Image 1 (cartoon, helix red, strand yellow):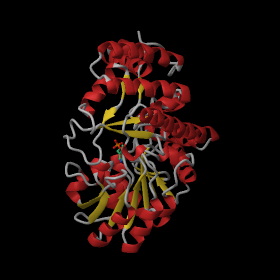
Image 2 (cartoon, protein in one colour):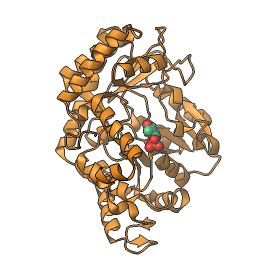
Image 3 (cartoon, helix red, strand yellow):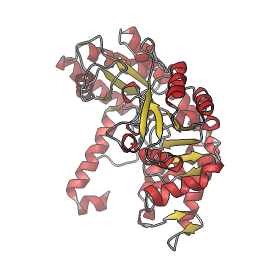
Image 4 (cartoon, protein in one colour):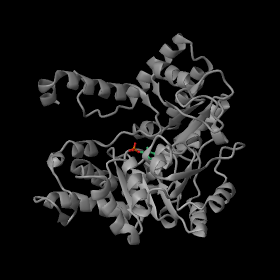
Length: 417
Ligand SMILES: *Cc1c(COP(=O)(O)O)cnc(C)c1O
């Protein structure tokens, strides 16, 4: 980063600070990950200069032969990885991918049935503060109070009663397998579209560790930066019959020029995800998360649904005085980064909450395995038991630093000056 350092000292300092923050703490936000050096390199390329509105072979600008090449690579790798009929890799984010999915198949005012935000859904699944809640008539399903799991019979009842035009599946904070086939059956029964938002678990599905929604959904959207471990961005998969309308909806309906440097990086990560090593990564994520859940449960930490099948656990703090917000702060002081999260049956505000979402995708990318996870689980339990104990936080903070040094991140990137 010599150029940046010379040209803009302040931005350089912030980037260097962020690098050292990422290296020195335990990144356990379930939606974050670390990309490979190859992906990072692709992001910093001259493709950022290129306007390439349109699609490969059908652009509105000249000079697109190399843009066509990377976008075709990304598209074909995406369809191969997920076994989908068609892919559009241009959405700038997961939210844009969902916007494209909705507007390709629905009219404003149509009814969608999505998962309740406080039960694990996402803002784009119908929240009133999001475009999805503003443009569509929203009904919601949730999880059972008793076991924290989706109640498919209840979903079917709501669907039959409210007759949505689209059922939206997928979640941001659901620790269990989602039965996409059951949702697909309900959607077919009422003649609704099924849009599956795979943002969190795309990498697990790609690696074969979670059943795929592709045979059971009309549209599958995802981010590329969560368990898929690619650049920040989105993509849409759909059945061949929806290909034309989907492409038209991404551009020109909701977006302008695609981010070609990001698409180049998407092509790289989709290539990585097709390799056997990626399936092994996913297997280790699931194993690590299960061990984390067991370690926490042994220490008396309550988990929504009692455990996990995927890359995250949801800690239920409703039985404690400690809020999600204060727990997040206490863990951060000990060098462990997580996020507060609402839980089913939430009584506190979304800014305070009674839950914590904790994920292992990023620390698994660093190479941490069962032993490290047990140690980390013990630290988290200790902090939750004594959130105000500064000595304990400092002691754990030092040990976190040692653990991080033992699993170096981007050893090839120079240490910050
Ligand atoms: C993260 C997430 C998104 C949004 O992705 P952005 O890239 O942040 O817009 C959409 N849906 C779900 C389920 C998510 O978890």
